Image (tube, rainbow, N blue to C red):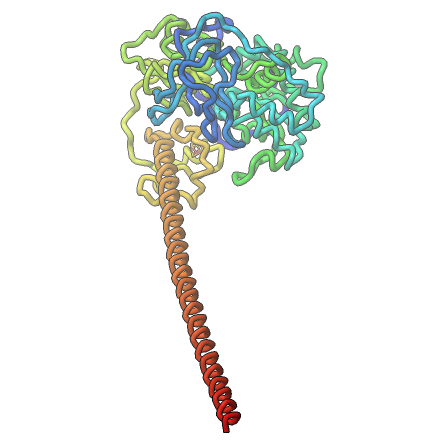
Length: 507
Ligand code: SF4
Ligand code: SF4
């Protein structure tokens, strides 16, 4: 596949792709499960606010939790049925901790609410953003950032270029690839709509050169439009938004800035397809394509309703081939181990890999750092991973911060190339969480100190006010006493004058 002109970013790696495992079959639709478990937090930001209670009947596409504040996203019923409980359930999160979920028992009638396409060309911007807040659409590339936040940027910063991220650079993951092959029209229509809403002059799709069929499909769907489809080399992490912008345009986004500060907005292919379905067909976000691959019998891509238990997806893929049943969510570079196969499919779940000793051999023993600097050469953010490792390991957290620990995108390139097998990213994650925890506790201590100072100042002020009031009262009483004394002196003098006058008359 012919590459277009591109600008190579520093570093990056080329791990074994393992993508053909799951691209042999078309997208299959997973049947409605016996129950759907919908976490209230499936996005970046505030937890969605409940709109239903146990016992409520719901229709497919009905909003069951609304966005709470500007950084939040709504949740919709993926099928019709009854809300049976609202409880804490295990969710697919690295912490393995439970979170609040709505459980729906489907009625298997799959009855839609009245679907109302949005007349997006006729309504004003505020109405459009309000409509998007109700869509439940988040970034489906894995970032799960509410889409309405990315669309409202234009109010503050003009966007000149819309970049559609079709890179899908992590090994094993093929949900975007298969979506592009089968639904390229939806993606191109969604990209055109998004470009219009953002007011962007240009729209460029960036796709890696390992997706020939997807490229052909996009090219065909975009032939009557001004959308450019650009082929970039297969190099991990080209799907990182800032790396993709550099590959396509040679524009470096500084670490302390967002691409929107430079007039560039990035959307994933699955997200623009969801935007198309919401605006043109009136369908909110209730499902996604998920790759199930690795050591399952039939690796494949499925369209899955949110809330479907992962165990149903594993069964649909022919079941597990291993005894240990260890599953990774996401890719092998940035993914994490799932705590259970009972977790539900969520908006962030693009891929599930069943691990096996053949695919993921046990980690080799960790050796001391030999200062070879291979990690620095592989780092796409131009950090010094070996220094960050040293500072994180020795708990010199402020030093790690000084060396831009928070610019690390946790891509794993450094760990991948390290000849000493040091799990570098784990150290960075630990250091980041420690720093965040320390910052939070410092902030809490400062808030408590400020509150206490404020309380003491208030007590002092009230004391002073009370003392002033008493003084005023005492002064008032003194005045009254003085006036009474004056009045009785005058009265006595008057009495004396009166007596003198009477005595004079008598004489
Ligand atoms: S690649 Fe590994 S051994 Fe080499 S400098 Fe980096 S951390 Fe040390
Ligand atoms: S994980 Fe962080 S330090 Fe390592 S290569 Fe990626 S960005 Fe650089």
